Image 1 (tube, rainbow, N blue to C red):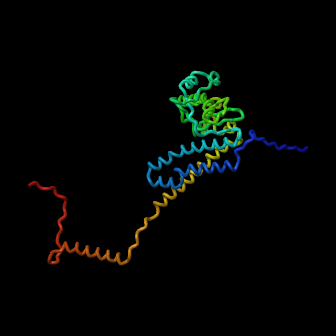
Image 2 (image 1 turned 180 degrees about the horizontal axis):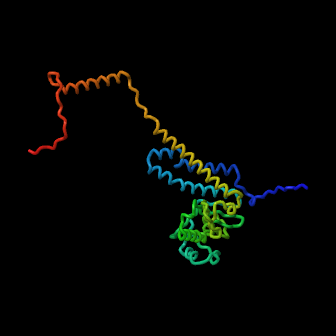
Image 3 (image 1 turned 90 degrees about the vertical axis):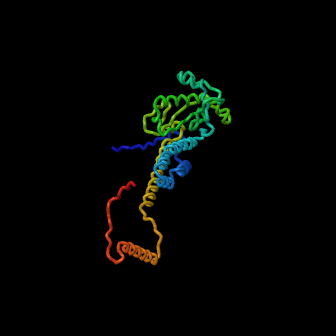
Length: 303
């Protein structure tokens, strides 16, 4: 009796894919641009030579640049889906005190159908990393990307999410007025975190690996993870080159100017003449050695 083994393949969940040469080229350009600012091999080498303060300043820029890279990567991956309109500029969303109070005092079911005027005069504003609008479903996502959301304590995180939701109540009017009459029927807020801690899907905290479901692009989360890994790899390579250059600059002997032979002879002659003069000082007039008194320094005498 023979067994027949059937080979099965899993069909992609989404029609659009992040596996493209164009996206890879965009990612490479993002990394090159961000590293050139302060994390290039030359910049790191100069910081090492300048001292600990300059080096600390350069190293502090790493998480900031990585956060910016993640934001750009998410926007680029989202644009792989033609149904999505990705907004990253002019996103100062109004947060009115009334909207914030409603969000803080009520469950989402009680205010999810409300909208507020987007007139932000005299009001606080919130600027998300990006807004992703699905023009097929008219659903907008307010997205904030974090390297790690768990640097926030619970109270700070709740306040931040309330601010995002309050801004969401004014988003439909904002997009209609400020972004060419874009139509929104539903607004959702989400924080994307790149760390490996536990997430809360129902609470609006998603891991970056779940980006596929947000933008409906196959391999979106894996693409961002690959982008981060490449960034880390290039930073490490630049750091290694900088350390090697710094070590080499300290280990090589300093070049001294060459001097002609005649000058060396003259210097030796001068030294011998000076030595003869010093020897002559310890001789008396008759050529006999003269005793030299040696002792401790003496305190000045009073007159």
